[in-house]
Image 1: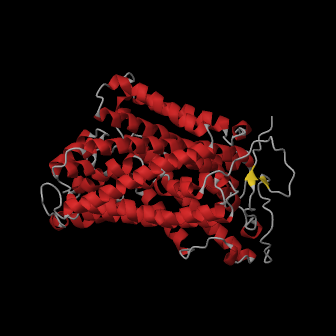
Image 2: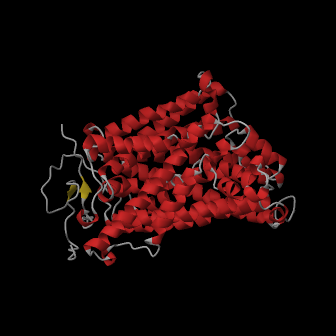
Length: 535
């Protein structure tokens, strides 16, 4: 395989069609209708929900201004490296089924099965999480809990219809709301800087006052002596809320089949991830830590109340403390649209991941049925049905009333799910990289080649494995073992291995040898992916 033909037609999945092939034009296929501007905006702000606006306050209280910034930077760098690994594979073959198919082709079909179903669970649960969060945000104006079911119904129906309309309308919808998110966040960053420099109504120049007083939370979890508590406190800064904030970035792989000119648009989108991490997340947490003390009574009270509305946002606490009156209502409105938009994107990702699994024969084939407008209808219906779990947050489910406060208890499993997905992506890239070396395929054939490889993928694999292993360390701290939190913190790991070894045992799959791995199949310009569903 040393001789590489750049014009070679992709053959790995049998679902790629070009102008050279006569196909049934009435057959369902994915539409490459997502424009470059839409893909870039989705990559930058598509999955930004309530995490940045609300959870950043908990990160500040738990880690202190320096600790929170370190946590955001550590995870941000690792996620950026992961996206570069994924980006190389996606840009090379955007006609494949994202990291689900990459795991099957480059590691083991059983890995693709486990990765795909684990990811589907992760995103399909995140959709109702964001919808419920949006309904709670409305409580900032409407305190009647009996109205929550109405708001959930309206928003679920809305995101279903947006997805049903086709990727063309989905892309335009997300473009508008992503733009609103970015403008708001940039405006808040500028406002925080003005307040920090004394430009607010209170004219209090804060500077790095709180960084000097308490840069870290040295009393986190009351661990003593401090010399033995450094490593747990470092893990505490990389808390679930920080990981949850970055979750969903890998969903960019779900749009590979529907992006126009994908090798250009996906490459641009992957590079945009860096600006999202640095420009939006890191600068936000930096300026929040400059304007607000981690021990501020209003912040601690808001975290304890856990309202899920703008009253919990550190941005609002800072704005109100500076004497600005009107902005909290505006921020609450943006948080509402952000949660709604994020839920819409998670529903999209869940329906496409089911479609990809069905294409590979790892889910019922009927889930691969595609409407003339390119929508995998049964995958969308199945994912929407699961999203109806959001109704468990309604007041009349008294035994499950704890679900009415975001983040939902399922936040931790979905956070661990993101870690497992990121580890799997790094593993697939490492084996793909090695197979290209074994088969003598030069990396110069790659349309997008990152300077971070191969050490970037190895860094992601090792670092996220360590974080996943210590994810539930807090359950062992204290006088009593918290078995409920332990199950919540680690349930994804045995579930993943059950999926992997169960499929491996039933299907008899083997790890793909490096010398036999398909590393030459790639995207053919203007190709589309046809559904394998047959009436």
